[in-house]
Image 1 (cartoon, rainbow, N blue to C red):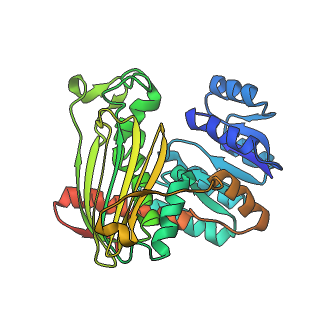
Image 2 (image 1 turned 135 degrees about the vertical axis):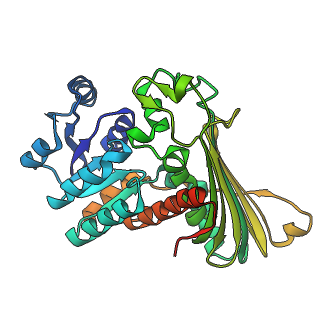
Image 3 (image 1 turned 90 degrees about the vertical axis):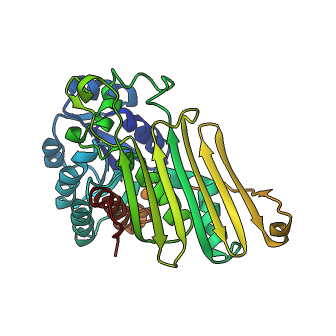
Length: 348
């Protein structure tokens, strides 16, 4: 598979490193409007072809697939342009900045008949895959209640650098720069953790978003700091179960930690994933009487990158597809409307 990397920012190196490690993949070109960043990236990964625009790369056309690592707001126009040329697409999350755009991208990809997948990177967590398997296997019975959180602390800690001076953080705090805040940025991950891991779909919800004062005039340079920093979302699932999902960049003491608790009428699961690793515990069977929580052993799983290459090889998309990411975007839009209207909203 001959691959083009679109966008050479901070996440692009992760894409390049992962794809380089897969047998049969050749990274043949990269695109970026910043010539200095593009040059350094291509030199570092020994990529031969360098393009200052997507149009130039598409006119060249000597590639099979594109991994789209542009900023969130650029996913929609760039992906549509690639799909028109009949190329397979692996897109960073979120697929788009609203449901309508995501749906347009999904329908375009399906009409073009190309492989389309989204890099919901926490699908690479083996414990998440195992939790879903256990739920679908009936080990917790009917899901009745779900708790989920994604806590980051980069607004209160310098562990990942200084957000006040680095554009890679500042754009995430600015609607003007295409950000839907913590809800759009990492909310998509914890929502996927819930609906995929617990194997349940969201029917309706009530969301609250909060943006905190962080700088004089709520602005740093060209960046208005107006995107949400924390959200809570109370949901009802299609099976009648209830859930609480929340995320914050003020999660002091938690660099980057996701947690999912699934409670059923026959047992429960607790999954935690952070920078120090992952764990999955279960309280099922006779253990619910004690109660006793047992660690669950897991086997390694293939990454999204590997599965995308397999999908291109056989010509059939694997999950997470554009269609699934569009559904997640519908939940995000629901949360935003619910917060604005101060009333419960439905995804149906």
